[in-house]
Image (cartoon, rainbow, N blue to C red; front, side):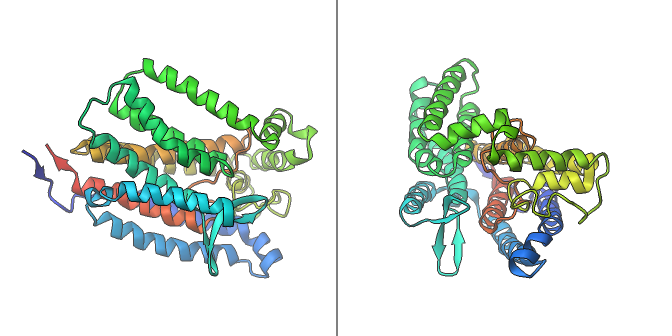
Length: 363
């Protein structure tokens, strides 16, 4: 017989780290984006104002989601997943392009990225699918079925956003591993995943070009951003040039407030500031792991693990891209890179994680 945990036992540390990252993100974004805001919009605070507005809405979503039993939210997992497929399909036909990437849907004066919604929908969908399955979850057939269920959204999102497609695949692998923690079958999954990514890369010439640029960025014109980002990291030293004193953000690193913001953080705050940012993310990931481990049922465990996987994969990929450890995939740094849709859904997702700490059902 199951009993309810006492409502109100939310993870205060988790909430604290979420709010700290949001506040630090706004500060770092403002320092990074003032030049572009002044040049493009004659307003140094342009990007900060838009991000602040999205963050206020996101904080409202954070506190609302934290007070809703995640079991009730998970009841809508399949409709939400199907909605993400519909929205991602719509992007292909009526999506808005920016910097050559068609990733946005316009709603009057507002626009948003369905890919950000898809990440949350996938976590809920897989958590619901696995936890409600009455048959065994430790078979190869179950793994294949689960990964196959993700292929529609992976294919649709990956058409214009390979990095998000990789994140979604990563979430799937993590949740299957939580449900079936054996190592050998994952060798097969890993091989299949590498094969899928290889085929996907070969379908478009520009993706193969990114591999060539990664290997020798100085040889290609499109390697300019990578080179300038590395210059920013190297010139920061131990303690950096000081907040607001970056030289690389003055047009040398294109769109510095987006994917490459970590390089400007390194330039302005140095190794010391970069480590502090990484430690903040590490603390958040730690609390998400604790939420998953302490969850009283499989549903809560999977939701916590899925959200933890999402944040961990995205942070690692972004920093790896900025440092040219992997090819450029156009992925943002959570809470810090400019993007209203991203911060809104991230904070809603964190509220869902907080709900897991409040409403988990003890066995």
